[in-house]
Image (cartoon, rainbow, N blue to C red; front, side, top):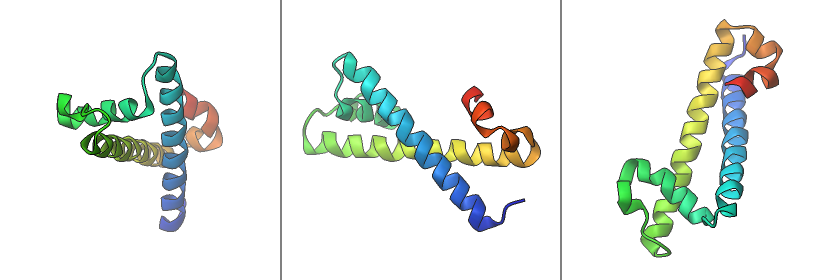
Length: 104
């Protein structure tokens, strides 16, 4: 079993990698459709703010995009923490993390 420092490090790295890869994927996939990276992040923020998140290229719009980025990474860190907690009970998640992570 890992100590708290190692647990924090594993969750932090997992959340950072997952959040970044997911964000890059979303920006590329929606960019092909003509959606800007700001709009992608505003969409994430719209989960809390509704239509008000889409304030365009204004200071408020950029603040909403920043909120979207924070929310996006928060979700990724929670997912990493859940994976870590599950891995304490299910040894296969530790033995084959790539295969198990791809299925989650």
